[in-house]
Amino acid sequence: MKRLFQNNAHAARSSFQTGKLRRRKFLEIFALLPVILITSLAGGAEVPKLSAKQYASLVTEADQTVYKHLHAQPPAQDRVNVPKKYWGETMLALKPLKVVMDGVNLKIVFQDDREEAGFYLCPVISSTIPQARDFRELVVVSAGKEIPVGTLYRYRRAQE
Image 1: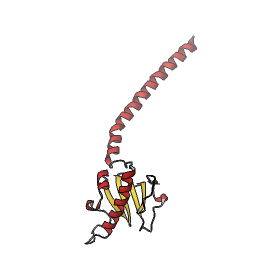
Image 2: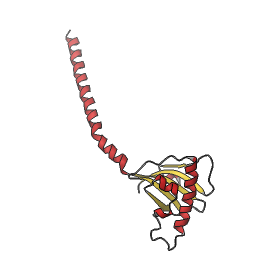
Image 3: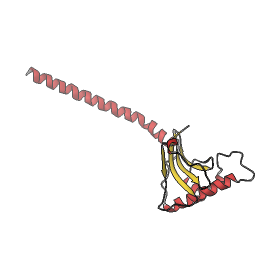
Image 4: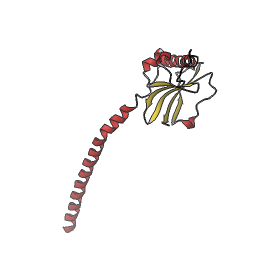
């Protein structure tokens, strides 16, 4: 009988402690919600999925953007950040945070907080292709057919 009482007392304590633990976990998670929301909203939007039409337009426009920016008259003071006047319609419609030159390659940036994410165009004129080891994620984007003006990648990498 004494053993039965001890087992019941232990079970009651355990369920009470389990309830306390559940409440504590709930409060910890609830307290983190504002941090999670702020973090997810901080650095811009996710990299969008592209339709076949958007893919073709974006690759072509990005190649034209590289050309216009590199051959601007007078030459641009800032050779890295590409002004919006050189962006194509599809680029403008996707609303990236910025468009940046990386040598003669082009980065279309949608997220720029703890990590940078977006599209990376390697035009045909480029002698440097992106190396997977420099990125957390580097995937060739294709809509079933390749556009002959360059290769488009979806990328993600830690901020430098």
